[in-house]
Image (cartoon, rainbow, N blue to C red; front, side, top):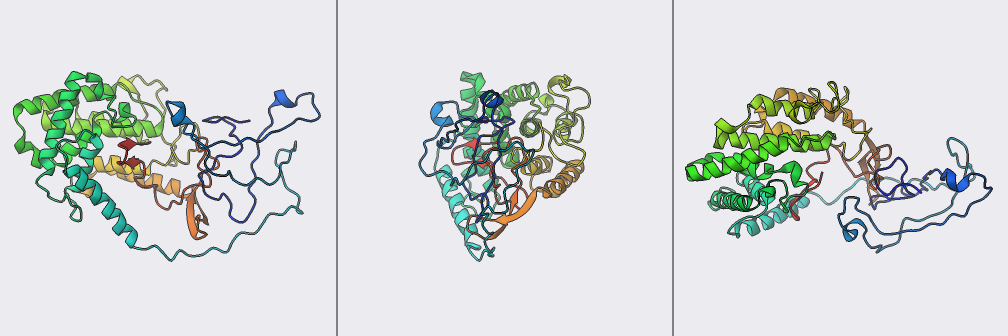
Length: 403
């Protein structure tokens, strides 16, 4: 019963690994298929369990994982024909546990995070060339941060330059690297955006060190990247934002390297406006495949897709990143005021989809709503989330951007 991935009926249970309702029973209702019940007085049901699934896996091993631990506990099954099932008052429901207030860990978590980041940066700085765009971006982000081992390190800028040159040479041999970079997940959306962002962030240091031939090659590469992204826009909100964000970064970097071949600022800024719901979405080359009045967000500030989306709809981190891309480097107050206002509007709208709950250790917490979302199979009871979901989508361990 139900679909394993993106359907209107879920299968019996696919949670996020945390207790769905601590101390109490949790009810799941599914329709029995008519073809199995029509004309019958009884049917035989069988429960089967299997390991976790990743719906986007390209091989069976990626798609279906082994079952290595017991499933969630199962208590009782009911059948009914009412529109809403109401259990008898005699049924044991359990009692909610007394919520505790988390006392630890504390600030030492940040120390451990910094230690992990610095371990990664030390490894990157030891390399002759970086083959991952995310590694270039990571070093560029770390360069101005005083607590990192990469702070003002004289090895950073030459390493970034060598790495961009290496990418260009690989691109010349294989032009499709522009949208098939194996180091970047969903590279057809990000194109050369992460690398462009690294260049843009360090441009004042990079500009005096590159020669005209390098500028010409880099310009050729980013022009091709820009041509691809402007003709391959997608209408799902999070995908639209990712594509337009990195397209904007590529164009900004191209305007530094070779301004004569960059698109006008108003054009790529308009794409950002479309993605964050400030203007109707026009698609690729103004084709308007969804008509003249399709907006990526509702008037109240929620992403549309095919309905409310708890996880893929949580794009506050992306819009924050979009705003940051419109800022002058190192001056966060200089970003586009309309995008900033829209970000605050979206934050207010998403705040209604947070609810009080317990974390997996029984402490008071706030979780994100993940029951009514049409694309949230496998996420209940919802991650512990307060503001936005943060940049958890960026995973530098595996070079993956997982939208």
